Image 1 (cartoon, rainbow, N blue to C red):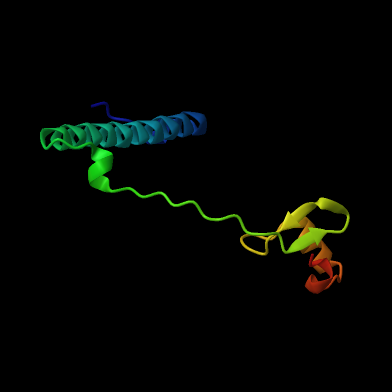
Image 2: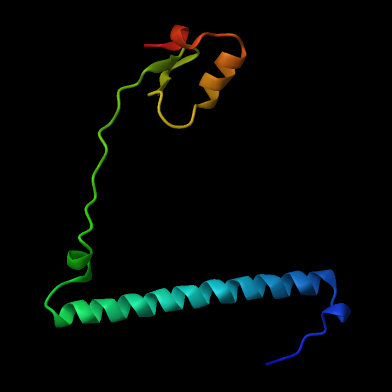
Length: 104
């Protein structure tokens, strides 16, 4: 392994070294995950299953929620009242509009 003399390196060289090191760490993690996945899939096949069968992954789709608020400036923009407030809603509230005035 190479020894680095960090004191003699320029800022650009240090940043490049850091970027390369970050990439190497991420690639290492990805390789380990892929290896673990291959090993688990192989072991599952030995028992006659797929990995997804053993993991018993159940995906549930959330039902769409009806919109509760409408942008008076653009009626096509609506919001259910769940999650992050849209910019138009936040701007209207900051301008003094009551949330009830925006309800559908």
